[in-house]
Amino acid sequence: MNIFKKMSIGKKIHIPMILVLLTGLTALIINSLISIGEIEENIYQAEEEKLHSYFEDKYQAKIDIAKLNVIGLSHNRSIMTALINNDRGPAIEQLQAIIKDYKANTTFTKY
Image (tube, rainbow, N blue to C red; front, side, top):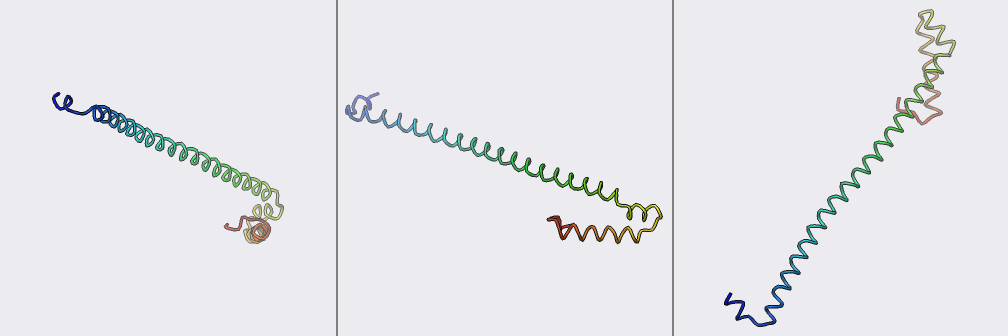
């Protein structure tokens, strides 16, 4: 307590002001770091949801195209006749021609 009594009025005012300023600055920095972490987490979560939705839509589109192709192939008379007669040769030739046509006229060239 003797040290406090010996201090000048300027020091008695400046020291508590500096302590309050440092405490406030520390609280501000901690709050900012916590907020940044929460913002990053929200951004990652939103991006994950967008990507998941995008891939789900693309996958569903491929499933729909596959269903349409199966329906189209199931009504192909030459393929049906070849499979009924247990003659795979004409069925394979017909399917190869269809695949070649798909590759030439669509963007599905990987398969």
